Image (cartoon, rainbow, N blue to C red; front, side, top):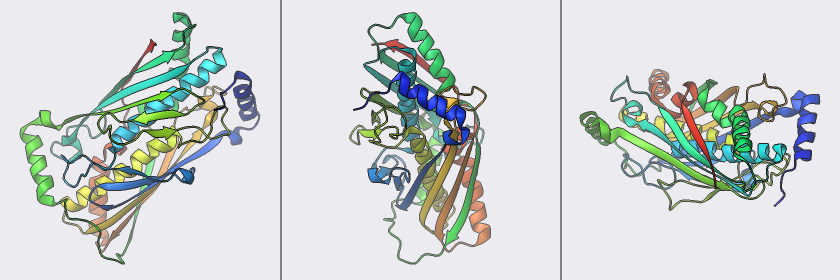
Length: 353
């Protein structure tokens, strides 16, 4: 596994400074939901890595626990982005790092998503975690300086703690085949869950989690403690980034996957609750990011996404007014849309291994 070097990173920084257009990256994700709340996620920039299944737990009507939840995936993007940032900036600062591990968790109240209480936030209310840096020869002063550099440049921290312009268009297509849905999701079941969470708000509180570790290059092994039987999953940087070996999708692709799969699930859940026959949901999203911000080439450049665009394609015979009503409900309640649109408090402490 190739390790990043300060010289190689410096060459990239110089190249981006000379040609800012070369620093512009377009990250992408797309997903498809046809059965229950299970959605299949892929990354167009790295199609060779295949599909990842994302789902809801059995406690959610229609959930089959076929994969991690979109909100866990979002935290996985944060954890792995932190690790890459620590490894990159440690390399530039001359700090020898054997490994970086990150565990994060986020709080979310399902009453917001399900519309039980409209005053409740729909996305994460807070995110906290711990980064463990194995750097035996580093002083506390060096670790503090390293943390300061990462806090100022990590794309996912900047993205989640700030706001981003998000545009999601909707189009429809008529069904051409019989539904694949097994009928496990119903309006009655959603209504019963909403009533139960309204009667006992504490039951609506969820803690989503992600844990990962980077040891060689910029590749991380990612797991989700709420669904440990799935994974581990690989994330990495492309070979154009010093130390990247393209063994998995990039963290920024991953967070777009959290958005597309959350959109899929939100559309299916609200269509079911509203009595709308929705056979399939397909969501594609892309985000613009200028790597000059992450690499500290130009501190005026934002470190996270500047803009995210997407299209949701609904396979349904519903008329235009019905689809507009459905879109309004999803726009108002999708947890990932809310997480992207709001400034989320993030607290990440660093400890030495």
